[in-house]
Length: 496
Ligand code: FRU
Image (cartoon, protein in one colour):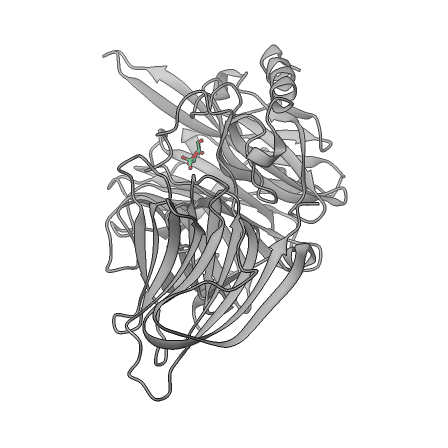
């Protein structure tokens, strides 16, 4: 084991012990210490879920990337394992960037990741060179492959950039051969997802660009994922430098999916629809797994590059994952629901039926908290015009509040953390278009101390954001401009 990895393991173990548990989310994975970004190597291996992550243990800001590591049996309770990789080889000396994992038929755990190494040009410029690499392990310790890197600039199509070539998604095809889908910048400065094939994991050949962005949905694409689901094929990605397209995509870093068809003979993908994966503020770089019981489950980084660098250096940890979400496809839409294991954490059910709210704010006894699973259905009043606005407010006290509000006449749902205690001029609000019938809408809100995930209409849309609000702000209220009726079901979520 390299000195760099040994140092990181010693450091994280000592530092983790200094971070009180209640300052972390209860059931969302957070950085063991320091900084966390993308989920990596999400896999099932030796009877447990493994989740690795982009990790800089020594600072709460991004730096030379390590791979942090945690395991779980239910995707909600995580145990940290020692860091799996440090940037300690010539080809990854400036970072072990994102990648994925596979349980190999011979019992080994394979990590495939991007090595980032800076090069200095003759004119003094610094450029990153990105290659794809392997590491083999037993679930705790990983050896980088002696023939790394296995995919380099030599494997690129014409015009493909060796400076932006990263985040391999690896899987095994039905015939036992391997595929890797890798993000790349093309000659026109756009993004493409390159599909490679190998029979021995060491020698890879380019099959084709599975998808190209042709100057839409941002430029460079990152973190591809590709899978079959409900008779369709789904391609996930994250994009830099996006321009908004009505309320579908927003400025800056964001995510997208394509639903389409795939021809296994020619290995070509045909897109049919595209949408954002999450319409909130903090969501990026998701990865999926096929669970042993056949569910396609997705976890994302619950942050965004555009807003993640404003905390003070002394913050002991920064960065958390989303709740794992079960995926399904219906009518070209990717549905997401919190993994069903979450229901096992539900306690103290409280429900209210047909609560009328008219031109004002209502608090319901027992409905409060910051570890909460809340279901709300909103019905219009049969004898009144459709209401103007409904708002669900939470993490609320005299000083603070966050919320989500629905305007049926505009068909927009807005998340808002302007009054959450943020002292920075970052994005605090975002809107999504939500189709509805006469103002009927169904929301499920998951609160885990410093985050809110809002699942709309059984997961047709999701809006996710983090809040840095004092934990004493635990009120929840229901507001109406106009007249409406609510059904509310609320559970506390147990930490144990
Ligand atoms: C996405 C990303 C990846 C890269 C990693 C570096 O968030 O930029 O493309 O591998 O983060 O930490």
